[in-house]
Length: 428
Image (tube, rainbow, N blue to C red):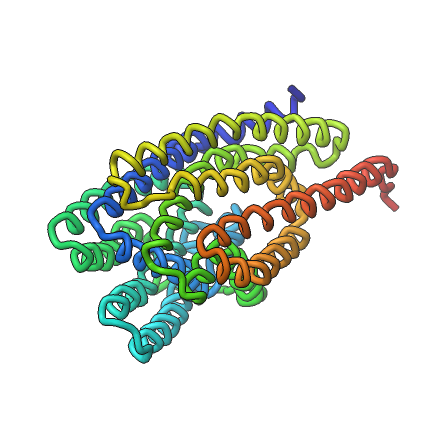
């Protein structure tokens, strides 16, 4: 392996990468178990309603955060800033986030109460709307800890949150059903912010005036736009199923299948976290860049096959043994979604390479394109074929992403080769 690749790996491990990777695996596993037990103790119609509320909440949380995570990550990671300056800037971000979050939460809460839906649905959606300020603040605090490189602390804390959520949520839903789950999630959303505030220690009363960077707000604006598009694309299938009137019980089966799918993505996500900085270090060696890109893509694509087969088998066992056929069709839907996973594994490393060489605009453009395609073909397919239409929509969108990303990679690789061939500029 190229020497620079080895150097990149050593730097990542010295900054706590093992803790991050182990934490990601543990979080995925605990979250997976939490969802399985909740599905076990709730009727499919109620489980489907909860997963729908989570889909809408994911998009709303991006708006509630106001994009402040981007400038906080950008400037608080800058070694030129002192500890007091970082804490003061975090306080500024928290104030702005709280304003955005309260506005979004009130609007969402008002829309829920004004809708003419049944009492159960209103209760579910209202509960998750009330969580938005806590979710937005927690996301900002987590990003801040990432920016100041508290990776070990962050990893331990996130795993602890998942375990606490597992115990509290499963216990509440077992004892009190849906209402118990709603109460538990609302309380946990705000409780997790307390230790995060203690760890980050924002400086709300700085000894001197805080110097806010001039592009702080513009970075936040572009971030909230890009992140909202990504979140909308990620949860568009669930939202479309809701808008097309798909039965809640069917949505529950599809939602559970997506939980297995996201567990599979966790495998590739760990690879992406390693690959992104590695490709940055290879920007000036296009031949090695191309070699590593192809090697990693082929290996991840091959590794995805047994992962997909294993998860489909596990889903069949869960469907027939653990859930007593209350979620019939789970393994069939997951088999279709695994086609998307196999396609995704062929370009996941390529997407990381684009980020590594700074092709951020191209990545945002691809996200917008695939989201538009998902919405355009998702509505007619879901109206006609229900959850199976949603699954095939995901496969088609993933195929489009594979084609576009590899086309952009060819262009970027050619550009890197041309730039590396230029003679170095001489000083005047």
